[in-house]
Length: 110
Length: 528
Picture 1 (cartoon, rainbow over the protein chains, first blue to last red):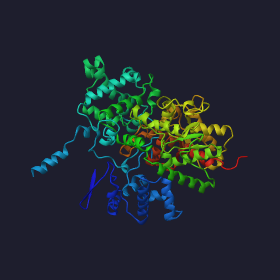
Picture 2: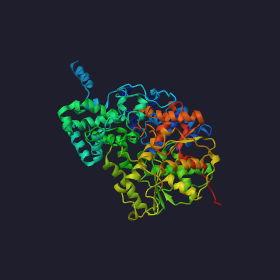
Picture 3: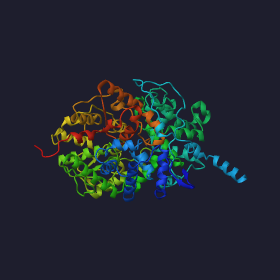
Picture 4: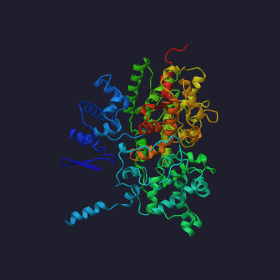
């Protein structure tokens, strides 16, 4: 599968996740977010940027607890929880946040 | 113009493989998937034949297939290859031959499958599913089928039938509930495994399962979590426990000479609520003073080789565990909360990677392998750990028996231990406990709807439908007794239920592990 955005073709897997991490840009993220019905706020970007940084270092998305711990640091204790994460990304961090961040879809029993 | 028209025409041409796997058909969006209505009881639905025929999982990519030793795509002479493979399987597994011959159409199985009850599609009746393979068997392997064809229940293996295989053998979670009710014990799981094995051999594989098997071979777990990421994740979990409880509970990895090697599903490292059970195991080991370790190379108990009926892949994946035993030299081998892994560990490890005995340094006085629930239960019985039930007073729990634990294994040294031990743990950790309807638990348990390799989002409809009977039983005890916690000992069940319970109006927070409850209730610190 693939999609076109401003004259460039982006390859994706069957579920619409970018196959090339490096083809990602903020423009692409905005497009993917729009497809998911998400309006990217600063908080959304913080999550996406953390996911990308973590992936660059570990070659996998962070465990959910690590992401939430980081959110605690970014947004304070009252927003460092999974309820707030699901407020930002209602379909869940794996389905939506990873997709918008250009990461592959997590596999396994998750 | 001519070129453009030709190109357009070319785009519309579907290959045989596209037709079989529905590759060009749109997949439903997760948000649009609706749950069947709960009526208050589990009853035989009004039939709608073929209504789920459209559902097809993503097909595995050519490179994945080749890495697994399968053809990259549907081979030209697929009918011939499939029949030859079926012949080999019939020869190798006498059980399969018996299941093909022995069905007397008594109808006992027809209303026992959660995918039938949830989808209303009679093609999801176990006998109908088995017949997809049986009619091919009859056509190519029996005299009456060769002579009388359709009259004898035989059918030529054509593209349309292969398409039905791809749809309906991916609406079976291999949970074996139907076989409990079959007077002959026909095991539809084995039939579905054989069918998937045949499909792989002709070049048609399922993406979710096959991608994960390749990842497991390459990296050591289903997630693809490399040792560096695993170690960082475990360190972070240690910090979380210490911050929460003020006790330095450790999650050791690759510790040579530790008494216990724990093999657990990798989702325990990564996902919620799975990680809460990992924390529970760690606290149990800590408080019991048990020297234990995880392995960064055998960081997966799960083994999807079973789901595709491929014993070579199952054995290759399990061999990582044998290697870890040889390297880390534990005395005991314990398995975390994972349903199908426990079936493989309990029923297959000894033959495919064994013997698991003194020859690999394991102590004979312990079960090899041992389930984490049995380990914890033994500590409780001996008073080696103590639980404070009031820590779980906010919960009214029930227990969902996971299919592979319930119907394909045992636990402890008494018959039915696989049912009673997890229940005993919940009751030891909580003041209240409520059982769901008798017809939906223990050996008659319904599958969560996501087992057997169905845990993939493009077939979420199937998963939501398959969860219907369990959700009905849960909803009933929720209404009658205020139940608000669905206790589990399976990573697939945990992932499946957290995803599908919201479709039934239940918050995902009500889904959790048995050791999650233990972890909350355990009294840490100095012993009296």
